[in-house]
Length: 240
Length: 233
Image (tube, chains in turn cyan, yellow):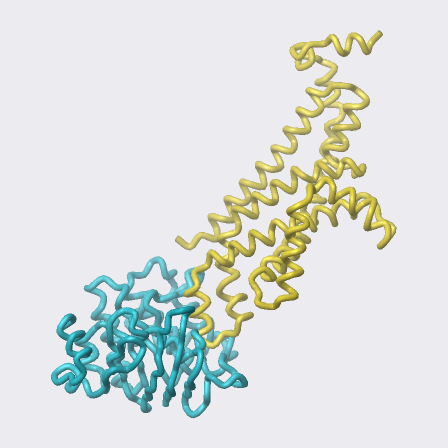
C-alpha cells in the first residue's frame, strides 16, 4: 500500500531523514516510535508530500508521489492525515469542517456529504456537536472531529502525527478508542505516537526510528519484549 | 476698511461671531453635498483598492517571480511617495495621455491605487497570521493551493484584517480631502470655497471637521458591528 525507498530529507544543515526504507501492507497498522527529533513526523509528512524529500521515492498504491508528473492533490484525497494540533477550520462548524472537502473537491452534493458526515460523527461519538464551532470543543473532541474530517474523503490510508500528544491525559483514551475501531475495520494506518500501550495493543508492526533511520522494526512483542538494537533498548527503558 | 477689522478680530470674537454661525447654517446643504461626494469617491476608491490590494498581497506571497516583483514595485511606489504628489502626477502628468481625464475620475484612480498598496500589505499580513497548520490540513485533504486559499485561508484572514481595513478606510476618507487641490467638489473643497468668500475660518473648517468626524465615527461603528458578527467565539 505504501512503499518508501531510500528517503532523504534535510532542513538546511540538518539531515533529518538519512535513507529510510519502509513499507506498509493493506490493512496494516504500523506504529512509529522513537525519541523527539528522530524524524518520525518528517517521515509521515513526506509520505503525503507536505514536505518534499530531497531524494528517494514514495509510492502509494503503486503510484509514485515523488514523480514530478504525479497529481499530488489527487493522491492526497486518498491519504487522510490527522495532526497533533488538530488543525480544524475555526470558521466552520463541525459539520462544515467534515463536508467542506467532499463538497468542494469531490463535487459530492451537500445532502449526501452531510449524511456521510453525520454517520462519521456517530462513529466518533459526536453527533450532538454537529453544529458547534471548534472552539466549543475539548481537545479530545477536536481530534475526533479531525479524524472524521479525514475519513470523509474515504481515504485508503490514514496517517496520524502524534494525535494524542497535545491532549490532556483524560482525553487520550477517547481518541485512541476511535483509532482502535478504525484499525479493527481494516483501515491501513501509520501512527506516529508516544503511546506505547496503543502501539503494543493495536499495532501490527512497530517501527523504531532514531537519527533519521529505522533502527529496528518488528511485531509489538519483539520490539517491546526483546528489542535487539541497543538504541531501542535504551529508548524503551526510558519510556516504559 | 473691513479687512483691518477682520485681522484685528480675536479668537473669542471669531467663535462667538453670529455671522460665522450663519455662514455655516446657510451652507450646510452645500457642505453635506460635498460630504456625499467625499463618501462616493472614498467608497469607489476603497472598492478598487480592495481588488488591487488582494492581488498585491497575494503577489507578495507567491513564488511566481514576475507577480512578486510587480506587487512589490507597486506597493513600494505608492507607499513610498506622498499621496498629494501621486494625485498631481496622475491628474496632470499621466492620465491626460491616456484619456480625457476629469478631476473626479482622476481622484478615484489616485486614491484607489494608493489604498491598494496599503491594503496589499494588510492582506499579506492577514494571510500570514493564519496558522500554517490550516494550509497543511486543507492540502492534506486534497485541496489545491487555490482551493485552500479560497475556502480555508482567506475567510480566516478576512476576519483578522477587518480592524486594519477599517483603519485604512478611515485614513482614506480623510486623505480624500487632498483631492480638493485638483478641484473635486468634495467636502474640503467646498469648505475652502466658502472660507474664501467669508473668511470665517473657525466656523467653516470647524463645521467641516465635525462632518468628517461624524462620517469616520460611523465607519468605525459599522466596523465594530461587522467584527462582532463574524466572531465565532
